[in-house]
Amino acid sequence: MGDRWQVEVDRSVCIGSAQCVHHAPDGFRLDTGRQSHPVDPEADANERILAAAESCPVEAIVITLLGSGEPVFPPEE
Image (cartoon, rainbow, N blue to C red; front, top):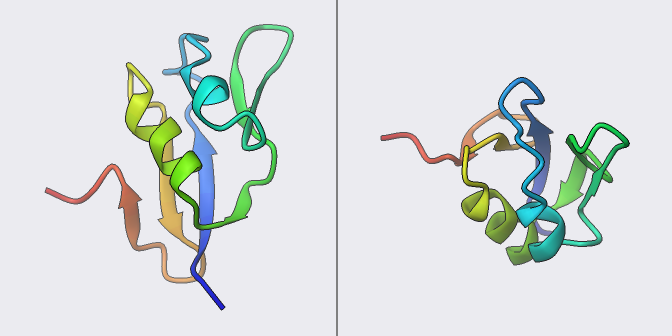
């Protein structure tokens, strides 16, 4: 079995650019206020969700390993 991720969007930072929806249409949705949210906050690790996080112009998406909380994105510096 592969890794599972906790996917969160900081709505105080999200500007509604929809880049996440473009890169991972099955992973993110915009609500009526144009704020992003994950379709499933506990998702299987996949490249589309990671690409969505990397493409966010304000880095509003945070991904951690489910269970351990180890950062996936943004990576620890």
